[in-house]
Amino acid sequence: MAVFLWKNLFQTTKGRTLQQRGSSLYNGALDYDEELIKKKLQQFAGGSVNLSKEHSGIGILTLNNSRLMNAFTGTMMLELQERVTELENWKDGKGLIICGAGNTFCSGSDLNAVKAISNSQARWDEYVHVYAKYLDQAYEVLCFLYSSLLPLISIALVQGKALGGGAELTTACDFRLMTPGSEIRFVHKHMGLVPGWGGAARLVRIVGSRAALQLLSGADRVDPERALRLGLSEGTLSSSDEAVSLEEARAWLSQYTEGPASVIQAVKKVVTAGRELPLEAALRTEKDVFGTVWGGPANLEALAKRQKHK
Ligand SMILES: CC[C@H](C(=O)O)C(=O)SCCNC(=O)CCNC(=O)[C@H](O)C(C)(C)COP(=O)(O)OP(=O)(O)OC[C@H]1O[C@@H](n2cnc3c(N)ncnc32)[C@H](O)[C@@H]1OP(=O)(O)O
Image (cartoon, rainbow, N blue to C red):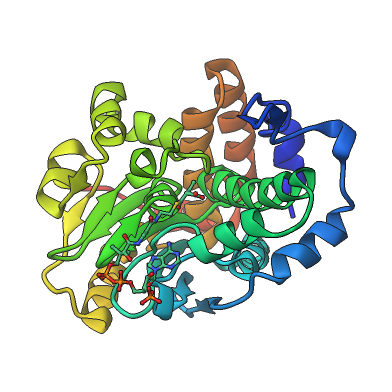
């Protein structure tokens, strides 16, 4: 997946100085085999991440672990990466809705897995590496979702609760829509943590640093009304019913995905380039992306029709 490209283009978490019992979470000297760590993550199994790709060019990605309020297990993290790779290669894709099964969004990391890893008899170094892999996986896949490398316009459909890593996941989407009674809550402080999946940095860009500081330091419950005021949500849907809210989210997104996939994807790329790159690089990217649509089928068709915009 282009996550690896992303890794090279932008700095990864490696080299950061998160200190745990005096040992860095990322310590090059203790590099474990990737496949081995993948196998370890697979030990923390349960739930699934399902993708359905609709004819309209909208993908529906559903977190499915209702027994644990859609908490992310190790295997779900791996599946999320697989599904996102599938979306990356979807030529006709234009939009993406991320939602949770069972009328709730996501309660973050699977705390059972986190506890099991830390309580295992394994060496501390090994715990650090397994957890680091989990964190790496979450961090990279969310960065990828948010980046121009995935050229789909995305929405987090927040029903019920989006807590911890679940709240962070909402920030990796372009837009958030909330159902009545739902909440987004960065509970990390109460867990003795800060966001680690990139959620804080993205939150600052969405709501500004003062509001982000309040939401993180207060571990505030953000209901749909406050989310709207803060610009964290685009709108409150009329129903919290799973099927109805999904239909409403689809209708909302369709306003922006009308038209050829090549053009919608190009729009998403130029906007995300503006969001994530220094100005000069963003300007260059825009010119390059323009080159991919200029003289293309949609452009030629519009010219032939002598399209007017009255
Ligand atoms: C950087 C990200 C960060 C990290 O990686 O460390 C995190 O994401 S930390 C995780 C943050 N999330 C939490 O702390 C959620 C804790 N859970 C709750 O607050 C509640 O369970 C809640 C509000 C999600 C739901 O409350 P409600 O009363 O509606 O239901 P229950 O509490 O009975 O929950 C049902 C069932 O689900 C289990 N559950 C919920 N969330 C998790 C989770 N994140 N991991 C594991 N299990 C979870 C809960 O324990 C119940 O199971 P039961 O066997 O009945 O105890």
